[in-house]
Each structure stands twice: as C-alpha cells, then as structure tokens.
Image (tube, rainbow, N blue to C red; front, side, top):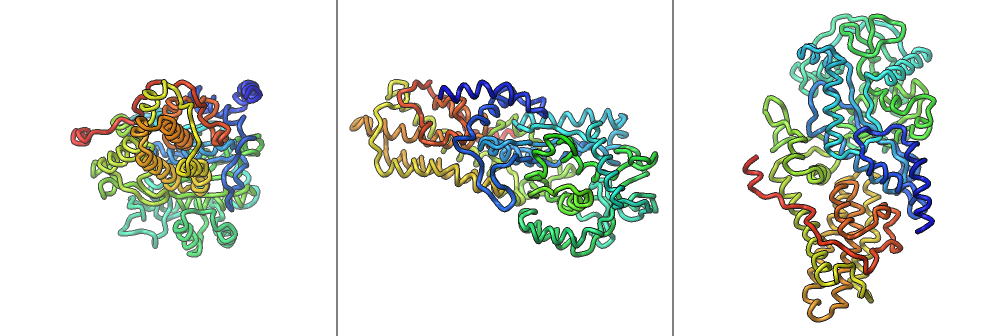
Length: 566
C-alpha cells in the first residue's frame, strides 16, 4: 500500500494536468476520484468485451447536444443520467473516458425564439445554454466537456468538414422545395406526412424553390446497408435498427444542407447568403469537441464508443451522420443507442396538457440520487416509460429506504452497539451460508459489467437490487440479534459478512447514486482511495477492528403526505 500511495501522489498532479476538457461545474472531489481510478488499473481493469467494444480502449460516450429553444425537461435529465452512469462505470473500471454533452444553438427555431424574447440570437442562447449546464450540475453529471455550437472552435471544425465534403465532390448547389418542420429542423417527404403534419406531430411548412447546397446522400444507400449488415450491433435496440434499415431501403434522396431564408447558423465557407442546415452543424459537435482532425484527444477517443440519443433523432444519427463520415473518410462511431420517451400518468407529455416534468422540481422534492435511481430503474433502457409520483415514491421507498437503507442502518447499529464501535474483529470460521453470500458479492461486478457493456442499465441496477434483497434474506435467516445472546463470535461473523457485502454493493452503486453510495462507504469506513472496481477483491476486505462512527440514515423514507401536497 505504501507503493500505491506513492504512485497516487505522483499521478495526481500529472493526470490532473492532462484533463484538458473539464466541466467547469465538476468538483475537486470528482477530479480526485478520477486520479485515484487511474492507479488501480493493474489490479482489476476493464469491462466485458462485446462485438463493438474491446472493454479496455479509451471510451467516448456522448449525449445528443440539447436544443436551446426552451428549458430542460425530464428527457434531458434521463439521457444525461444514463450517459453519466455508463461513464462513471467505465472510469471505475479503470478506463479512460471522455464524456461529452452540450447545446445545439443554431437554427430557425432559435432565431424565432430569440425574436419573441426581443433578444439577438447570441444573447438568447447564452442565457438558455446556462440552464442545461446547470441541470448537469444539479443531477451530479460528470461530463468532461460541454460543447456549444456557437463557439469559434466548433464553427471552425464544421467548416473544415464542409470543405472536405466539397473537395470530395459530395456537396453541390441546387434548389429545394418541399415540406419542412421548424420544430424538428427536418425536411419530410409528402409520403411521410400524417394528417398534414410531420410523423412527430410537428407542424410543417412549404419551402418554395429555395437555393440550397445538397449532400449526395443517395450515393450512400448501398454503403449504409452494407455497413448495417457488417455491424449488426451498431444500432440498438434491435427494433430501432430495423426501422433504420427499412427507411434506407425505401430509397435515399440527396439532403439539403444549407438555408438562405434565415441567418442564424454556421456560415457556409465562401458564401455570404448560405448558412449550414442545422443538422450538419450539430452532428459535427462529436468531433469538434475532440479537436478534429489533429488533436491527441481525437486520436485517442475517436471513433466514439457510444452515442446515446432519443428515438426521435435516430434518422439523423443512424443515416445522415454515418453517410457524412463515410464521405469525409472519417471512421464511424462504434455504437448508437436510441432510448424511448417518457409519458406522465399514461398521457403524452406536452405544454398544452400542462404535464411537463421539470427535473429541478423532482430534485428539490425528492433528492438527486432518488431522481437518478428512479430514472435508471423504472423502465428498461431503450423502452418508453411512464412517470407518476406514486411509482417514484414506491420505488425509492422500497429499493432504497426499506431494503438498502434499513439493511445498512440495522447492521451498523448492531455493530456500533455490540462490537465496541468498531468493525467486528472476532470473525470466522465462515459457514456455507456465509461463503455463498460472499461469493455472490465477489461475482457481482462481472454480472453488472456484462449489462453495462450492452447499455442494459436497468438490468445492471437489478443485479445490485437483487444482491441487497439476498442480503436482507441472509440477515433475517442468521438473526444476529438472537446470536447476541447465544454466540457472540457467530454474531460478529454474520455482521462482518454483511458489512463486506455492503462494501461491494456501495462501490457498484456509485455510478447510479454516487453521493449516497459514498455515504455508505463512509459509514463502513472504506478508505476513499479504495473505492474503485479494482478494489473489489478479498485483498481490500473491510479491515477488522477499525473504528466506525454512529450510523446515520442514508435514505430518508418519502412520506405519502408529500405526494398529497404535490
């Protein structure tokens, strides 16, 4: 341990300097955590490999960049938390991570919203972008960089990509007429309209013969289909892949990639009147944030390991983006995961219904970790989900307050009162029941890692929830409160076993409920530099005889009165 401590101290300065793209809202403790993670890779390193990820290479995970025409809602919190869970899990596994989020700040919709507010577009996006950055801080999101498409660095890369596509003869000048949705920032064919509206329900307007540059999307129909066939796990879940293949097989038309009817966007190189169509600008964020084309970060983290998006923007990411990258000669991302939408009490969420869910309100009413936990466990990741206060309270009270919180409280209270305010020291020998629960804890990381590697966040959470349930069953069967009167050595052994299982549980819960998990580790007196997945071995078992503090409740129960008041 002396050697490890020395290495840690040496790495702390140098590794801290290499994190060039740090989130301004990130805390010092988060940076320290990442520094500590780097030292432990020789002990236990990486995540289970898949057909799209070797489990060891640097890992870039991205949210979509959020459109700034309005304030953040539950969908933004959901996507950001999912990416954060994956990023934290990878870091705790010892992998280098670049977690990207940001805001999409150009387009006709932004220009119109700014005009309604009496602001110029830059003033408007400066104001609204802060709301999304603040949401990441509120939800304890550990992104490494926050990209803004109005930054000079981003615009420069978008123009570089444009020039590359021009040089390779994939962009040409023509005229466009057709149906366009300002809300979706998307062109639609007549056949795609439903009752005169976009498939998303958005209003459309007719664009009459506007001069436009076009991207030769039609040239990539066969190439895309071949790519999907060669990389069957590129798009997930599988149902989304089928949607994309069906769309491409239906025939691809060249894509309008510039507009002249409004001015708020990245200027097309060499043209005074054209600005880039918002999606060719927005999608470029994934490489502009890495310093494309010559930076060390681009070389290290591209191609991206994982783009996480909502299903409403699947076409842009699964068809347009890969085609543009193919045209430019840039490697394609390894994996694209499109999750579902949220409803509330069985109804579609909309302003007109007055049922928009504000994540700020959820955090203020229930807590950060409670909100993160509900979002990651209530619905299978990839499916649509329904929000209700009743479901929120029930899940948090059952899984966190009753099962995990109560297990911690009664175990540590018994240790504090009956073992001299220290970890049991008169431990062993282990019985078959002890070995069984300990072995389950030892293999918990492998089970959880397999799920996270495939973005099955809900099943990862379930593995930990089941571990807690099994441990509650163990304590009820062993009855240490009864052993106190008949066999104190056996009582101490049972309590120690539970504390060790809780150590595994808390370390593995850090990606989902980071603050609460670390509070539990504090109660167990686990050193702060022994909380990575590298430390989930018997070598780092809780030290017998070490002092513990009087336990405090980690998860206060949400009372039903709070639901009535809300």
